[in-house]
Length: 158
Image 1 (cartoon, rainbow, N blue to C red):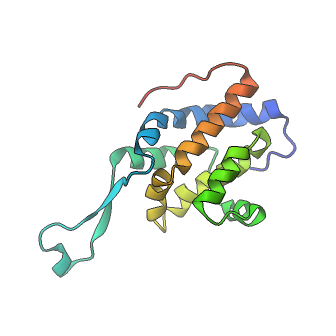
Image 2 (image 1 turned 30 degrees about the horizontal axis):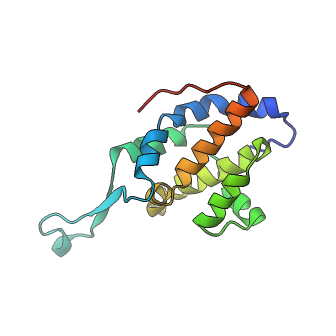
């Protein structure tokens, strides 16, 4: 959603409820940043008769499922990447670090890249954790919402 015409307070109001749903994954994402959260299933004899497939941690799949049902999902996320020259996780992390409340829709675009893009390139789901992008996104969103709300945002623990 384009938030250009919204005030800062309206942006916070629009994103806050869905953001809080995702904040409960912050502790897990922090612990798992830099680690693999998927493996390749290769049970007995599978290589002879079938193609090996990835197996993901349940918490990651829950996060993806929950994120899919939020206002953060934007099918036009590719425009965020082309407009801001985002080509790698380093570029994304640099952009996230500098983001302001006016960039919430762009942060949503980055989250959409990993969640929606992961439907066809499932490695993106685990790369979001491994590269620390999910954690950086949610931390920045929490920081921005708390700044504009003027209070600490409570969220349920996972």
